[in-house]
Structures are given as C-alpha cells and as structure tokens.
Image: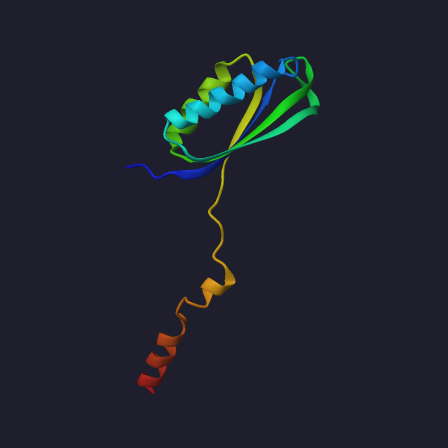
Length: 124
C-alpha cells in the first residue's frame, strides 16, 4: 500500500487559448486526478500573467495551481500528460510537508528528560 502525500502542482497554459479551451484544460487535469483517486483537490486559477522570460515564444501565460493528496505514481502520470500536452508550456510539482505540531499539542508530549533525572537520583 502506497501512502498518499500532499502535493502542489503549478502549471502554465498558453496565453492564446480561448477561455473555453482553458477551462477544458483545467477540467481535464482535475478529472485526471479524480480518476487516479487523488483526494482534497483544490484548484486556484491565478489568471493571465507576464512571464519572467520567453517560454516557447510566449511572453504571458495562464497560471493554474492544484493542491491535492495523491500517490507518487499519480504525479508521474500527471507530469507525463502535461509534458505531452500542447496547451501546457511549463509545469512544476512540489511535495508539501505536513503541518507542524501546534504549541498546545507540544505540552501533551511527555518530558523526555524526566526519566534521566529519576535514573540519576536512583544511582546516587
């Protein structure tokens, strides 16, 4: 059994895509993740933005951010699909770390030094 991890994929669509085709591309990758049994899928349409440098002859792009929980094999399949697509000019996937334990929860953790003090008192 493979563990699902948190991922964030940012991809850039060609700026010359009509809104309907851009929405279709977004729905395509969302449906792909659903078929691969990804969970907690969140899509953020970041809009059309200027690129820092030309990518495949484009100065602008449509930025889309996906946050989800999936297996590593799902990421391989998703990136292969994006690599072969003509609509996607750039993509990047990051593995996110789980959130840090809150300070209130840290108080519930037993003090690790207490047994050492007890052992030291017993030796004396």
